[in-house]
Amino acid sequence: MPPPPSAGILLFRQRAGATEVLLIKPGGPFWRNKDAGAWMIPKGMVEPGERPAEAALREFEEETGTRLAIVPFPLATVRQAGGKMVEAFAAEGDLDVDRISSIEFEIEWPPRSGRQQRFPEVEAARWMALDEARAMMLPSQLPLLNALEVKLKADH
Image (cartoon, rainbow, N blue to C red; front, side, top):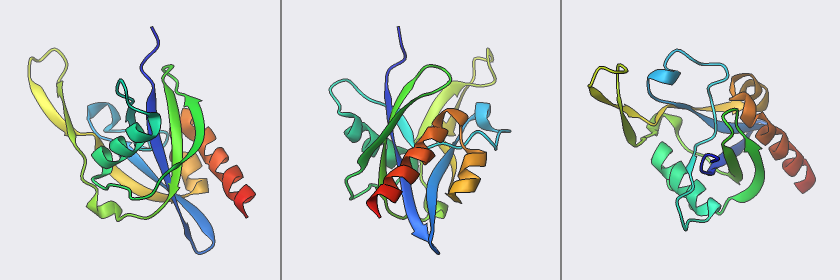
C-alpha cells in the first residue's frame, strides 16, 4: 500500500532582484546531525476528505506558526525517496524565521528505551537563495525549485 499523499507550500519572496525560498529543517533525532540535503518545504499528510491545498495551508501553519492569508497556486508533484507523493503549492509572502513556532510530536527515544520524548516538528526555518536551496534541499524535492523558476519566468 502506498504511503498517504502529502501536501506542502514553497513560500518565496524577491530580495535585491533574486528569488529566495523558505525551507524548514525537521526536528527530532533523525535529522539532528544532518544539514545539507535535510531542508524541505513545510508539508504533511493530506487527511481524509481534505483537499491538498487545504492540507498544505494547515501543515504550513502547524509547522511555522504562521497562517497564510494568501491562496497558494499549484506548483508540482514530486515523489520522495521513500515513495511518498508530495503535491506542492507555491505562494509569494514573507515571514520572520526567528519567530517560527512548530507543533510537537512524540516518539520513543532512545529506541526500545520505553521512554517517550517530545520534539518540535520543525527545528529551524531559513530563507535561502535558489543556489543555496539547491545545495541544502532534500534531493527528491529539488524539482520544486525548477518548477518555481519556470513559473516565475513565465509570469514576467
